[in-house]
Length: 86
Image (cartoon, rainbow, N blue to C red; front, side):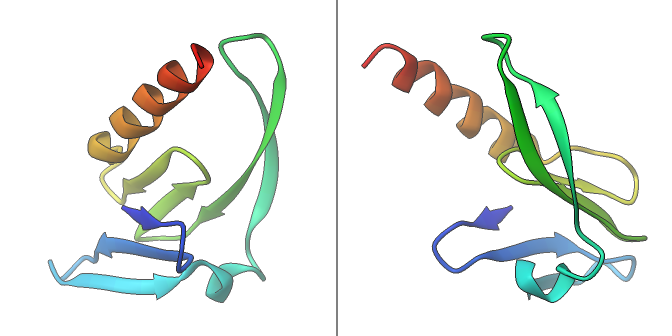
């Protein structure tokens, strides 16, 4: 789960502990990748890939098991769908 206001990432590490860290702590390994959204437009997302998680800006976190943070994904998709009709 991410908190956009503070710029933090929360994830469960390999020991089962909840860890909160700043996104900026990973700037040295972060990279950017282009994706095509549902409207066919190219969007650039920040990606942080570590042993314990993969973070994709605007989507959420995949753990080391590759399980996407579905709560964050659903919220993002609902927001995009809602804003599309404003």
